[in-house]
Length: 319
Image (cartoon, rainbow, N blue to C red; front, side):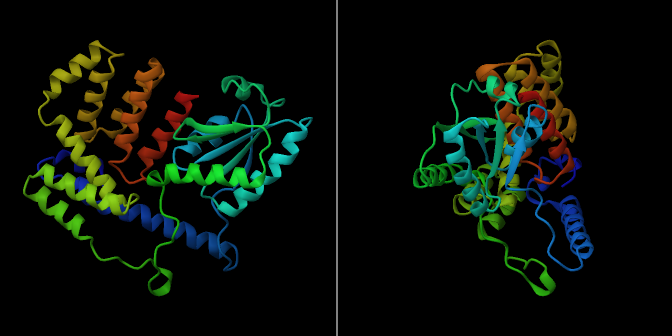
Protein backbone atom coordinates (compact mmCIF):
# COMPACT_ATOMS: atom_id res chain seq x y z
CA UNK A 1 0.00 0.00 0.00
CA UNK A 2 1.44 3.35 -0.95
CA UNK A 3 0.94 6.47 1.15
CA UNK A 4 -1.26 7.81 -1.64
CA UNK A 5 -3.83 5.18 -0.72
CA UNK A 6 -4.63 7.24 2.37
CA UNK A 7 -6.05 9.98 0.14
CA UNK A 8 -9.15 7.85 -0.55
CA UNK A 9 -10.89 7.69 2.84
CA UNK A 10 -14.34 7.29 1.31
CA UNK A 11 -13.59 3.74 0.21
CA UNK A 12 -10.67 3.02 2.57
CA UNK A 13 -9.11 1.11 -0.29
CA UNK A 14 -5.68 1.55 1.28
CA UNK A 15 -6.84 -0.11 4.49
CA UNK A 16 -7.85 -3.38 2.87
CA UNK A 17 -5.68 -3.67 -0.23
CA UNK A 18 -1.92 -3.77 0.27
CA UNK A 19 -1.50 -3.43 -3.46
CA UNK A 20 1.73 -2.96 -5.32
CA UNK A 21 3.72 -1.84 -2.28
CA UNK A 22 3.21 -5.08 -0.40
CA UNK A 23 3.80 -7.17 -3.54
CA UNK A 24 7.08 -5.35 -4.18
CA UNK A 25 8.22 -5.91 -0.60
CA UNK A 26 7.38 -9.61 -0.77
CA UNK A 27 9.11 -10.00 -4.13
CA UNK A 28 12.22 -8.31 -2.76
CA UNK A 29 12.23 -10.63 0.25
CA UNK A 30 11.98 -13.68 -2.05
CA UNK A 31 14.85 -12.39 -4.20
CA UNK A 32 17.03 -11.79 -1.15
CA UNK A 33 16.27 -15.25 0.23
CA UNK A 34 17.04 -16.85 -3.11
CA UNK A 35 20.29 -14.92 -3.40
CA UNK A 36 21.35 -15.97 0.09
CA UNK A 37 20.57 -19.60 -0.69
CA UNK A 38 22.47 -19.42 -3.94
CA UNK A 39 25.49 -17.88 -2.27
CA UNK A 40 25.51 -20.79 0.15
CA UNK A 41 25.55 -23.30 -2.70
CA UNK A 42 21.94 -24.27 -2.26
CA UNK A 43 22.05 -24.53 1.53
CA UNK A 44 19.36 -22.81 3.57
CA UNK A 45 20.01 -19.17 4.28
CA UNK A 46 21.42 -18.15 7.64
CA UNK A 47 18.73 -16.88 10.05
CA UNK A 48 18.42 -13.10 10.22
CA UNK A 49 19.76 -12.87 13.77
CA UNK A 50 21.31 -14.93 16.54
CA UNK A 51 19.19 -16.01 19.50
CA UNK A 52 21.90 -14.98 21.99
CA UNK A 53 23.65 -11.63 21.63
CA UNK A 54 26.07 -9.56 23.70
CA UNK A 55 24.94 -5.99 24.29
CA UNK A 56 26.91 -2.90 25.30
CA UNK A 57 26.02 0.68 26.19
CA UNK A 58 26.63 1.60 22.55
CA UNK A 59 24.46 -1.14 21.03
CA UNK A 60 21.61 -1.23 23.55
CA UNK A 61 19.29 1.07 21.57
CA UNK A 62 19.60 -1.01 18.41
CA UNK A 63 19.96 -4.52 19.78
CA UNK A 64 17.40 -4.26 22.58
CA UNK A 65 15.01 -1.32 22.21
CA UNK A 66 14.67 -1.45 18.41
CA UNK A 67 14.65 -5.25 18.27
CA UNK A 68 11.99 -5.39 21.00
CA UNK A 69 9.55 -3.49 18.79
CA UNK A 70 8.90 -6.82 17.02
CA UNK A 71 10.51 -9.56 19.11
CA UNK A 72 10.61 -9.99 22.90
CA UNK A 73 14.11 -9.46 24.27
CA UNK A 74 15.18 -11.10 27.53
CA UNK A 75 17.98 -9.17 29.25
CA UNK A 76 20.48 -11.18 31.27
CA UNK A 77 22.43 -8.71 33.44
CA UNK A 78 25.52 -10.44 34.81
CA UNK A 79 29.20 -10.03 35.72
CA UNK A 80 32.24 -12.27 35.53
CA UNK A 81 32.65 -12.37 39.33
CA UNK A 82 28.99 -13.32 39.96
CA UNK A 83 28.70 -17.02 40.88
CA UNK A 84 24.86 -17.19 40.67
CA UNK A 85 25.15 -15.66 37.18
CA UNK A 86 27.25 -18.63 36.11
CA UNK A 87 24.36 -20.91 37.12
CA UNK A 88 21.60 -18.89 35.45
CA UNK A 89 23.19 -17.80 32.17
CA UNK A 90 23.60 -21.33 30.71
CA UNK A 91 19.93 -22.02 31.49
CA UNK A 92 18.83 -18.88 29.65
CA UNK A 93 21.08 -19.68 26.70
CA UNK A 94 19.69 -23.22 26.47
CA UNK A 95 16.08 -21.97 26.52
CA UNK A 96 16.86 -19.26 23.97
CA UNK A 97 18.19 -21.91 21.61
CA UNK A 98 15.03 -23.97 22.13
CA UNK A 99 12.87 -20.92 21.38
CA UNK A 100 14.54 -20.62 17.96
CA UNK A 101 13.99 -16.89 17.60
CA UNK A 102 10.61 -16.50 19.27
CA UNK A 103 12.53 -14.37 21.75
CA UNK A 104 16.13 -13.19 21.90
CA UNK A 105 18.53 -13.35 24.84
CA UNK A 106 20.59 -10.17 25.26
CA UNK A 107 23.52 -10.53 27.69
CA UNK A 108 24.78 -7.41 29.47
CA UNK A 109 28.04 -7.38 31.44
CA UNK A 110 27.18 -4.73 34.04
CA UNK A 111 30.85 -3.94 34.70
CA UNK A 112 31.56 -3.33 31.02
CA UNK A 113 28.24 -1.48 30.42
CA UNK A 114 27.40 0.52 33.56
CA UNK A 115 25.04 2.91 31.74
CA UNK A 116 22.56 0.12 31.04
CA UNK A 117 22.41 -1.14 34.61
CA UNK A 118 22.15 2.46 35.85
CA UNK A 119 19.30 3.31 33.49
CA UNK A 120 17.46 0.14 34.49
CA UNK A 121 18.14 0.76 38.20
CA UNK A 122 19.58 -2.72 38.68
CA UNK A 123 20.19 -3.33 42.39
CA UNK A 124 21.71 -6.81 42.26
CA UNK A 125 22.71 -9.50 39.80
CA UNK A 126 21.76 -11.70 38.21
CA UNK A 127 18.77 -9.67 37.09
CA UNK A 128 16.57 -10.78 34.19
CA UNK A 129 14.19 -8.38 32.45
CA UNK A 130 11.84 -8.97 29.53
CA UNK A 131 11.61 -6.01 27.13
CA UNK A 132 8.86 -5.65 24.55
CA UNK A 133 8.02 -2.63 22.37
CA UNK A 134 10.60 -0.54 24.16
CA UNK A 135 9.50 -1.23 27.74
CA UNK A 136 10.48 -3.68 30.49
CA UNK A 137 7.34 -5.74 31.09
CA UNK A 138 8.43 -8.27 33.73
CA UNK A 139 11.52 -9.81 35.29
CA UNK A 140 13.14 -11.49 38.27
CA UNK A 141 16.32 -11.44 40.35
CA UNK A 142 18.55 -14.26 41.46
CA UNK A 143 19.43 -17.63 39.98
CA UNK A 144 16.26 -19.67 39.54
CA UNK A 145 16.24 -23.38 38.60
CA UNK A 146 15.49 -24.26 35.00
CA UNK A 147 11.90 -25.32 35.71
CA UNK A 148 11.02 -21.93 37.21
CA UNK A 149 12.78 -20.01 34.43
CA UNK A 150 10.91 -22.06 31.85
CA UNK A 151 7.61 -21.35 33.63
CA UNK A 152 8.39 -17.61 33.71
CA UNK A 153 9.14 -17.63 29.98
CA UNK A 154 5.97 -19.57 29.20
CA UNK A 155 3.91 -17.01 31.10
CA UNK A 156 5.70 -14.16 29.33
CA UNK A 157 5.05 -15.57 25.86
CA UNK A 158 1.43 -16.33 26.68
CA UNK A 159 0.93 -12.74 27.80
CA UNK A 160 2.47 -11.44 24.56
CA UNK A 161 0.89 -14.02 22.24
CA UNK A 162 -1.71 -11.63 20.82
CA UNK A 163 1.03 -9.26 19.65
CA UNK A 164 3.28 -11.86 18.02
CA UNK A 165 3.05 -13.81 14.73
CA UNK A 166 1.97 -17.46 14.93
CA UNK A 167 4.69 -20.06 15.39
CA UNK A 168 3.55 -22.25 12.53
CA UNK A 169 4.95 -21.55 9.10
CA UNK A 170 2.75 -20.73 6.14
CA UNK A 171 1.78 -23.75 3.98
CA UNK A 172 3.94 -24.23 0.92
CA UNK A 173 2.66 -24.41 -2.64
CA UNK A 174 4.46 -25.48 -5.78
CA UNK A 175 8.18 -24.78 -6.12
CA UNK A 176 8.44 -23.64 -2.53
CA UNK A 177 6.13 -20.64 -2.93
CA UNK A 178 3.65 -20.02 -0.10
CA UNK A 179 0.24 -21.42 -0.95
CA UNK A 180 -2.39 -18.75 -1.55
CA UNK A 181 -5.03 -19.06 1.18
CA UNK A 182 -8.68 -18.56 0.43
CA UNK A 183 -10.04 -15.18 1.45
CA UNK A 184 -11.46 -15.18 4.96
CA UNK A 185 -15.23 -14.53 5.06
CA UNK A 186 -14.78 -11.77 7.62
CA UNK A 187 -12.15 -10.10 5.45
CA UNK A 188 -14.57 -10.17 2.54
CA UNK A 189 -17.31 -8.81 4.81
CA UNK A 190 -15.03 -5.96 5.91
CA UNK A 191 -14.20 -5.03 2.34
CA UNK A 192 -17.88 -5.09 1.41
CA UNK A 193 -18.76 -2.89 4.39
CA UNK A 194 -16.06 -0.40 3.44
CA UNK A 195 -17.34 -0.22 -0.12
CA UNK A 196 -20.77 0.57 1.35
CA UNK A 197 -19.32 3.20 3.70
CA UNK A 198 -20.23 1.26 6.87
CA UNK A 199 -17.18 1.73 9.10
CA UNK A 200 -18.80 0.08 12.14
CA UNK A 201 -19.53 -3.12 10.23
CA UNK A 202 -16.02 -3.11 8.74
CA UNK A 203 -14.43 -2.71 12.17
CA UNK A 204 -16.58 -5.51 13.60
CA UNK A 205 -15.55 -7.88 10.80
CA UNK A 206 -11.87 -7.10 11.25
CA UNK A 207 -12.19 -7.61 15.02
CA UNK A 208 -13.83 -11.01 14.51
CA UNK A 209 -10.98 -12.05 12.25
CA UNK A 210 -8.35 -10.82 14.71
CA UNK A 211 -10.07 -12.68 17.55
CA UNK A 212 -9.44 -15.90 15.60
CA UNK A 213 -6.10 -14.92 14.08
CA UNK A 214 -4.42 -12.14 16.10
CA UNK A 215 -1.48 -11.78 13.70
CA UNK A 216 -3.50 -11.52 10.47
CA UNK A 217 -1.76 -8.64 8.62
CA UNK A 218 -4.68 -7.64 6.41
CA UNK A 219 -7.05 -7.40 9.38
CA UNK A 220 -4.54 -5.40 11.44
CA UNK A 221 -3.97 -2.94 8.60
CA UNK A 222 -7.67 -2.73 7.84
CA UNK A 223 -8.71 -2.10 11.43
CA UNK A 224 -5.98 0.52 11.84
CA UNK A 225 -7.19 2.24 8.68
CA UNK A 226 -10.78 2.24 9.88
CA UNK A 227 -9.70 3.74 13.19
CA UNK A 228 -7.70 6.41 11.39
CA UNK A 229 -10.69 7.48 9.33
CA UNK A 230 -13.00 7.43 12.35
CA UNK A 231 -10.67 9.71 14.30
CA UNK A 232 -10.31 12.25 11.51
CA UNK A 233 -13.66 12.32 9.71
CA UNK A 234 -15.08 15.18 11.82
CA UNK A 235 -11.88 17.21 12.16
CA UNK A 236 -11.01 20.50 10.46
CA UNK A 237 -7.56 19.57 9.14
CA UNK A 238 -6.29 23.13 8.74
CA UNK A 239 -7.43 24.12 12.23
CA UNK A 240 -5.83 21.05 13.83
CA UNK A 241 -2.50 21.65 12.11
CA UNK A 242 -2.53 25.30 13.23
CA UNK A 243 -3.23 24.22 16.80
CA UNK A 244 -0.41 21.68 16.60
CA UNK A 245 2.04 24.38 15.49
CA UNK A 246 1.02 26.52 18.46
CA UNK A 247 1.03 23.69 21.06
CA UNK A 248 4.03 21.44 20.40
CA UNK A 249 3.70 19.54 23.71
CA UNK A 250 -0.09 18.99 23.60
CA UNK A 251 -0.44 15.24 23.12
CA UNK A 252 -4.10 15.38 22.08
CA UNK A 253 -3.50 18.01 19.40
CA UNK A 254 -0.27 16.43 18.14
CA UNK A 255 -1.80 12.96 17.76
CA UNK A 256 -4.72 14.44 15.84
CA UNK A 257 -2.30 16.27 13.55
CA UNK A 258 -0.35 13.06 12.99
CA UNK A 259 -3.60 11.28 12.05
CA UNK A 260 -4.39 13.98 9.49
CA UNK A 261 -0.90 13.79 8.01
CA UNK A 262 -1.11 10.01 7.85
CA UNK A 263 -4.48 10.08 6.10
CA UNK A 264 -3.26 12.63 3.57
CA UNK A 265 -0.26 10.47 2.64
CA UNK A 266 2.39 12.41 4.58
CA UNK A 267 3.45 9.26 6.40
CA UNK A 268 7.01 10.26 7.29
CA UNK A 269 5.81 13.61 8.63
CA UNK A 270 3.22 11.90 10.84
CA UNK A 271 5.82 9.49 12.22
CA UNK A 272 8.37 12.24 12.84
CA UNK A 273 5.80 14.40 14.60
CA UNK A 274 5.08 11.68 17.14
CA UNK A 275 8.73 10.73 17.59
CA UNK A 276 9.55 14.34 18.42
CA UNK A 277 6.58 14.33 20.81
CA UNK A 278 8.06 11.28 22.55
CA UNK A 279 11.30 13.23 22.98
CA UNK A 280 9.51 16.27 24.44
CA UNK A 281 7.23 14.49 26.90
CA UNK A 282 7.56 12.08 29.82
CA UNK A 283 5.52 9.69 31.91
CA UNK A 284 1.96 8.92 30.79
CA UNK A 285 2.02 11.53 28.04
CA UNK A 286 5.16 10.03 26.55
CA UNK A 287 3.67 6.55 26.67
CA UNK A 288 0.47 7.82 25.04
CA UNK A 289 2.47 9.31 22.17
CA UNK A 290 4.46 6.09 21.80
CA UNK A 291 1.33 3.91 21.73
CA UNK A 292 -0.34 6.19 19.18
CA UNK A 293 2.70 5.91 16.93
CA UNK A 294 2.67 2.12 17.22
CA UNK A 295 -1.00 2.23 16.22
CA UNK A 296 -0.11 4.19 13.07
CA UNK A 297 2.55 1.60 12.25
CA UNK A 298 -0.27 -0.96 12.06
CA UNK A 299 -1.79 0.95 9.13
CA UNK A 300 1.17 -0.03 6.93
CA UNK A 301 2.78 -3.40 6.14
CA UNK A 302 5.37 -4.34 8.78
CA UNK A 303 8.12 -4.39 6.14
CA UNK A 304 7.40 -0.91 4.83
CA UNK A 305 10.63 1.15 4.75
CA UNK A 306 8.91 4.13 6.41
CA UNK A 307 7.91 1.94 9.36
CA UNK A 308 11.40 0.47 9.69
CA UNK A 309 13.00 3.92 9.68
CA UNK A 310 10.51 5.23 12.24
CA UNK A 311 11.07 2.24 14.52
CA UNK A 312 14.79 3.02 14.59
CA UNK A 313 14.09 6.67 15.37
CA UNK A 314 11.62 5.70 18.09
CA UNK A 315 14.18 3.38 19.66
CA UNK A 316 16.67 6.25 19.77
CA UNK A 317 14.07 8.56 21.32
CA UNK A 318 13.13 6.05 24.02
CA UNK A 319 16.65 5.29 25.21
